[in-house]
Amino acid sequence: MIPLTLAEVAAATGGRLADGAEAAAVVRGAVVDSRQVDAETLFVALPGSRVDGHDHAGAAVAAGAPAVLAARPVGVPAVLVADPLAALAALAAHVRGLAPATVVAVTGSVGKTTTKDLLADLLAELGPTVAAPGSFNNEIGLPLTLLRTAPDTAFVVLEMGARGRGHIAALCALARPSIGAVLNVGSAHVGEYPDGRVGIAAAKGELARAATDTVVLNADDPLVAAMAARVGDGVTVITFGTASTADVRAEDVRVDRSGRASFDLLAGGERQPVTLGLVGVHQVPNALAAAAVALRMGLAPARIAAALGAARPRSRWRMEVVPTRAGVVVVNDAYNANPESMRAALTALVAMRGTGRAIAVLGGMAELGDDADEAHDALGRLAVDLGVDLVVAVGPAARAVHLAASREGSPDGGSQWVADTGEAVAAVVALARPDDVVLVKASRAFGLERVAEDVVAKFGVAGAGIEGT
Image (cartoon, rainbow, N blue to C red; front, side):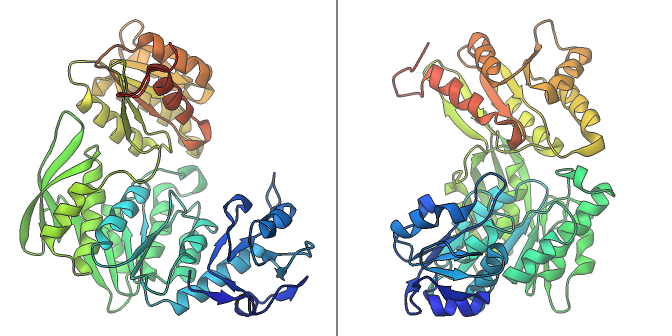
């Protein structure tokens, strides 16, 4: 973080120093978790439904925080403000104004985190780069990422999520991105939009309107391509995709038995071969979007291709591939799910099957509103149509997946329903055989990452001792 004194923090947030806070004390970072505090870190005391950060103010100062950003006196040095969340945003906006770094923002219904991670790898070739950890894409995570900006930071890569119109516009007002990339418009969180995908497109398009230098758009998605009409005067539009009209495109896309895609990258007048280190053909558009931004920033196509090939997953539970001692490969993609990402993951699973079987452990998809029943029914049918050998549907929300797979013609025993994650682990351990590939996927709220982790623990990671039986 660009160093600030507590006096400067108070001025930026409209706060006042209290309880012995020293105006000259310096902060070089900010956190909302008191367990992450170290020296010169400002602790932001956010109230929550289960935990109130104010209750941990003493522990934060004891751990080295020079002060707490708080809404009320907490008995330790503090900067008192009306609303700590609003103050966090104001502080991040202040740091953004001080920083010469180029801010790049990414949004889309699927692929945001992976694209952000790829951009972090590519832009690091050009200079010091800060990127959001995991999916820090909301009104808390995005300011925290901006506050990691240091005096020498060249690029800040942000991920922007939305659960309604105006959310991305508010994040953009804070971050003021120079470059915005819109990946796709799908059905993630469609239950939050009364007008469906039209509303989602309008929300994602707020980034296209806000970027001040360049907007990167998916030429293969009509709703995204149409956002070119929304960009500001003088803003450059760069398109990516497989369409022949795309400025940065992929040709000759193919997938190997490990599920990794190769293609020819056409960018900057050159053709460069790329083999991704990420699993799934759905990673190709993510790679193209990152390549388009990097090209705009001056990275040569050959270096882009090399960096894409060297990139590995940064964020957890997104197509994490773990070979086990039992010969079973577990793919943990349980961070989140919607109809589009489910299709992509199942397609990758079937491509990875080899001589074994494809086993899909599927939980519910959240925030689909009135479309939920139909979407889960379609998912069960899709699994069978793609050639998944075994479906294990987990929890009440996924019962429709099992029923649809059975109706679609899944062989006897080819689809089963279990009530919870514990039963899912037992089912997979009983079913899986050497050379099988097991995909675990659901929306984050259903906690299926525990299924993947427990199955791996039962079988043992390849190269380690087997844990359990």
